[in-house]
Image 1 (cartoon, one colour):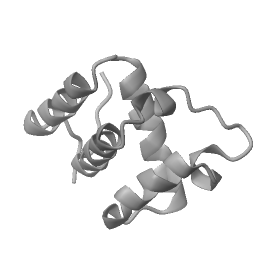
Image 2 (cartoon, helix red, strand yellow):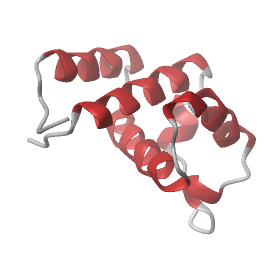
Image 3 (cartoon, one colour):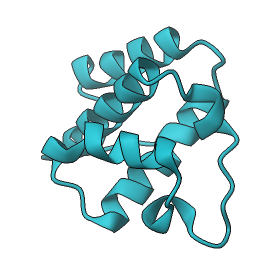
Length: 99
C-alpha cells in the first residue's frame, strides 16, 4: 500500500476533478509525450488542466508529478467517479504520512 501526504491527496483530488470537468480522462490515461512530458507540453488539453489547477500553486515539476499520479489512478480504474471517491476515502481515512 502506498501512503501519500494529505497535500498530495488534495492536489490529486483537484487534478482528477478537473480532468472530469474537462472530460479528458482518456487523453490523460494515454498521454505519452516523451519529448515534453506534462511539464513542458504545449498541448491545449494539458494547458487547460494547468489553468484549472492554477490555485494549487504548482511548479512545473509538481504539476507533472500530480498529472502522472492522476494518470496512474485513472488507468487503474475506468470509472472516474469511483476514482474520485477512492481519493476522497483516502483523505477521510487519514491514509497519510504527515502534513
